[in-house]
Structure formats: structure tokens, C-alpha cells
Image (cartoon, rainbow, N blue to C red; front, side, top):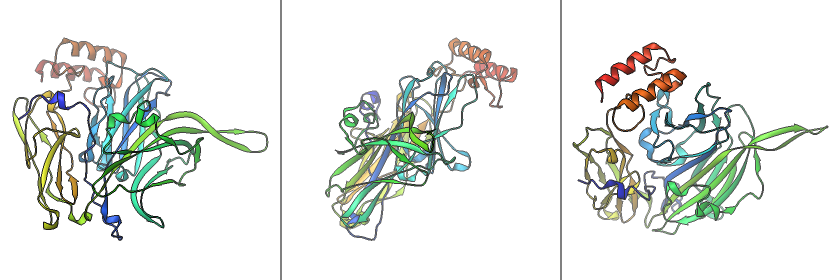
Length: 411
């Protein structure tokens, strides 16, 4: 069992291998897309200060999430399913912090593969007003395709705005050796600053018209990360006397995307197959839990090896199919196992270690005390949505009574 987890939580890395692709060409079968991650760098343009930010990703499920960006102001997000289990909602919220009008914040999520996303939206939630309709960022997908010049990694950006609105993007691209970290996908990171401009000026994207960029594949045995930063602008339309002119308007934000690919020594049909995925666990503090994985592989791939990761960072010396964990505040989060043979690697789905929720811990301090009571009273008197303790949809004395009862019970 491990306890010194804060040391190895530094420098988080995207996990390898989960999506195994099969293609008609033999050359294509020798490269896997083994992960995707994306960050959002967003301005608050709601005309009100905000204390919550939501990302909605249709097509994804909670077990597809391997790591989330830890925002220093909001902390880690919560991940919930959208109605009908059609996607996920990643929510950053903290009643002790607000983002001012025109303020800039950074949020991010690392997924098994970005191509599973069929729509993505984000929105700020103002403290005192109803939130505006969600803004839609462009759809960005990665796949391996056959071209006249040979197999390529293809990155496609598509405007899928529900209301048919055009948008502008300006792209930067770089290819990095190995796996990049979610924390590297920042506009001021050397990785992004050193990226090459694909578009000298912003490019207008109408709904349904894709922008495509192709890159070569990594050599067998190598891992590469193709990184593209998309600055996204609203479409500003003006009349110049005889025609409508489209030009870049207000900057919506920056989407920073990485697709990690692995060149396999043999075909993907030789890589390990996960037969038993690790399951998420609701634990109790100071109690031990265990995550288990089972896998098989063809004889041509050789023996299997295992490596567990926490929030996509390798856990030293945890290289067996069973991982035992002490349930502590610093060990809560996502776990996954990379199973490897001579042909390549496969990543399990993410399994989450959580503890029962404690909503009366209103200030997210980890325990219930008078600070929580004072913070709730402030939210209740201000009528913010955080004070809707009974989740009835509005704030009234029932919320106050429900909080008091929960506060007296404690966690």
C-alpha cells in the first residue's frame, strides 16, 4: 500500500493505449491512437462575476476520463453524466472564489480518445443571474487515415454550432516525442509558444465545413503527441454599404488538443485485450481497497506486463494485476492500468476511488465546522444557486432547514 501519494501526483502524464483501431490496410494496423486530452482557456464574458464553470462533452462517459486539470482557484472538478447517459458534465465550482468580468481561467480534461466526443459546450454560471446559453467550441477529432502519400494522423476541426453560427479559428501545431501532460497544454507553455502557425490569420469556419491537417505516423515502438492549439473567435458581421463583411470578433477562448499515437512493432491485433476492467469504488477513509484488471494476448505478442497509474501518473512499483490502495484524501481520484506486450499497450478504462459525498462541507475544506455554516448563510442571504441545498430549483427556507439538519449530523 502507498501513502506518499502527493509526491507522485506531480507532473501528471496522459496514459497510453485504450482505443484499439482496426483498419483495412496492413500499414494502418501498425499505429494506435492511444489517448487524447484537451484544455480550455476561457474568458468570462457573461457581464457578471461567476463562481462556476461547466464543460459538457457529448459521447463521453465518466470512465473515459483519466485526469482533470486542477484549477488553483476552483480546485478539482466534479464529473457527472448528462441526462440519458449521453455524455458528461465537468463542473468547476467553489463558493469561496469568483471570476471577474473579462477574467481568464484555465480548465481541462484528459480522455481515452477525443474522437469519441460528438459535441462539446461550455458555460460560465454567474453568481446572481441565470447563465447564458452554452457556447459551442469547434469539434476536434483525430483518426488514422490512408492517403495517396501513405497512412497519416488526421486532425479535423468542424464547426457544429447548433444555431448555425460561423466562427473563426487560428491554429498552431507541433509534434512532441513521447506523451505530453495535461498541464503542458497552456497558452504560455513553451510547448505551445514554440508551435508552428498553421494559419497566419484566423480562418472563417462555416457550419459543417471541416478544416483538415495531416501528419505522419510515429516509427514502430515510438510514441508521439500531436498538439494543436486553436484560438477561437466569434464571427463579427458588419454591413459596408453593399455587402456583409465577416471578420474575427471577440475571442471566445483557446482549445488546446493533443492526440497521442504509438507505432506498434507488430499489428494492433497482437496488442493485449482487457477482459476484466477495474471497477470504481466508494471507499471509507483509512480502509484498504483493491482494483483488479485481467487481460489476455496472443502468443506472438509475448508475456504481459502491468503498470498502474493514478490520475495518469505512474505509481512506482505497482506492476501486478491487483492494486491495493489506502483510502485517504490524497488517494481519491482515477486509476487505470496499462497492459503491455511486445506488440504495444492497451489502457483500461478509468476506475474512480471516491468517498460518500458530504454536501454540508460547504467550503470544501474536508471537514464540517462553523466556517461551513457561515459560508452557507452568506450564500443563502445572497440567494445564490449554491444555497439550493435541497436541489428544488430555487432557494427558500426549506434549504436552510435542510442544511441545518445535515450540519448537526456532520459527515
